[in-house]
Image (cartoon, rainbow, N blue to C red):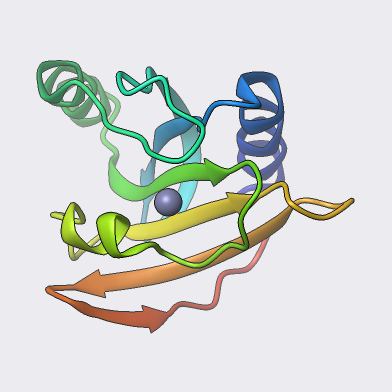
Length: 128
Ligand SMILES: [Zn+2]
């Protein structure tokens, strides 16, 4: 992903604290270049959900830019960057990277995964 997207993602998660923040990343060739802030309709410190109509609108905007969904991020304000059972159950985009921004230590820590069904794979990412 681009460094700009990395910083925007961390900033969004810090701004929404103590609630979980969530959003989408899009780009070309698997590199996330655009960040789309989404509303956490759960308004919860331990869970997140997005409005599916809003997700559909953002997917259309991505397509207009010639980009595709590259990642889905959310924050864990007080927990480590590991997907919860709920995160895994609601992960419906196996082609996207799932990023979890943990704010539980002094520096933000980002976990990146691919979630296929109930299987979770660690996914390396690099900054450009
Ligand atoms: Zn989570």
